[in-house]
Amino acid sequence: MTDASPSPRRVAEIASYHAHIYFDDATGRATATRLRDLIAARFPVRLGRWHDVPVGPHVAPMYQIAFATPVFAALVPWLMLNHGGLNILIHPNTRNPRRDHLCDGLWIGRPRALLSDRLPDHADEADGAGEVNTQPDPAAEI
Image (cartoon, rainbow, N blue to C red; front, top):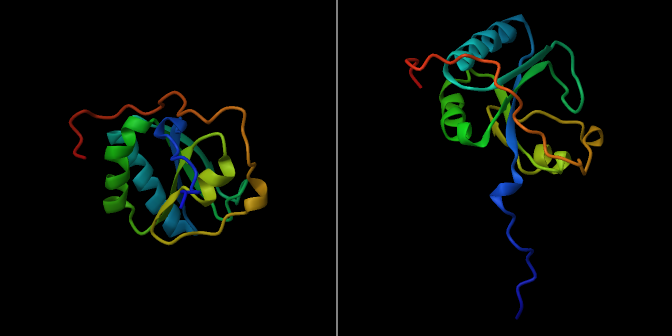
């Protein structure tokens, strides 16, 4: 009997990660603001713009955090413990945005709907983390 499963994918496919922090109302936005400030004080990330209305495949207001692969090991467990009840999608950035968001992501809190038809199957390049726009305090507790 032969193994028909595909070859394992290489972790090197992952250029970076995104975390999408969702909020629904003024209380959720206040919690999201506090979380954003705490993240900026602790982690070298790129904080994205606030989206107060759904944008792209996202059906709820949110902001995005882009981060390099070495940051994953500290940031994601920290978010698990400190998400404040917010729902967060964390996904890799490879050359397949649809798969990244819909199949290979992980959720903290409750999964949210995504509009799959707004996600391409292929990108010429994987999204990088971009330039860090935070100034973490080396003394901040993680």
